[in-house]
Length: 323
Ligand code: NAP
Ligand code: 8YV
Image 1 (cartoon, protein in one colour):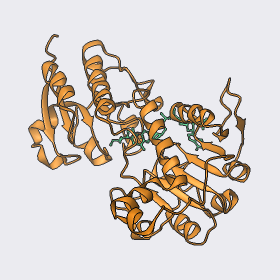
Image 2 (cartoon, rainbow, N blue to C red):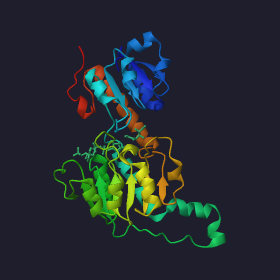
Image 3 (cartoon, rainbow, N blue to C red):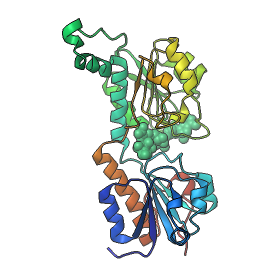
Image 4 (cartoon, rainbow, N blue to C red):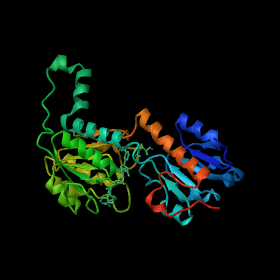
């Protein structure tokens, strides 16, 4: 492949295979995640593309005057200062589709684990209690006869819905508008959906419109047999309200892959016996992370070699390559 004269900044740890793909085409500079201070002024002025493994702030963007494109590692790009980037005519890309099935698998694993207490049962065995105390107590909850509600029936939401159907569960959903060609029952409010189901699965993007959307009212509507699964973003759930609801049997249990202030997880959640907590592993298999990294690299290569992005985010569809 022809060597391109654009200089690319890789911010954070990047997959080695995708990194060598980038190095074959570009001059690449690596820094620790988001630490723009590691660049001197001359280097900063030469950067035209960023492969980002973490947040990209307005200050980060302002430090790179020639920046044309930010290729975000992840389908969710809530950590990128999007309106600032758009103002500066910078293309943003993300990594949709290549992680959809992996994240849906994780969501189902988290749901099963939460309802049937599988991690706790394994700990019981490892602690020798099966031998010393007998069988693990029966789980209070079951997946049987549950009705699921999906908050965010997009790519991943639909993949989760298909799996839930295979498990014999009924599925309903809430988006801002109904999805065409889908037969699942639609609710035009989140509280309405929570009232109608007993298992709420959150898979919406983090944004101003979803911030703390799962609040005390929604949790109350979900009810005392209710299970909350969050595989979307931590910002979508009001964690104060969730701790309160889990402590006082307002809902029965929660399974969380994402948190308000990652990687910090509040002690009150860790102390709850009815919460299953995962360290944001939705897409975290080697194969899927490699596919995501390849798509980041492909976006940068396509932008600088052909003038188009492979997977631009909706807010930057109008942005074209500078002459
Ligand atoms: P997507 O295809 O864009 O789906 C997002 C869905 O959310 C759409 O159906 C959208 O429908 C709905 N939505 C957006 N804002 C809404 C609002 N304010 N109220 C109600 N519904 C709203 O995205 P995806 O590929 O499925 O990914 C979804 C999210 O999952 C990502 O943005 C990311 O935050 C998260 N994620 C997490 C992990 C993990 O490791 N835990 C991995 C991958 C992704 P409308 O536009 O009609 O409202
Ligand atoms: C990644 C994700 O773990 O794609 C997303 O939106 O949340 C996950 O797949 C994350 O982006 C990597 O930091």
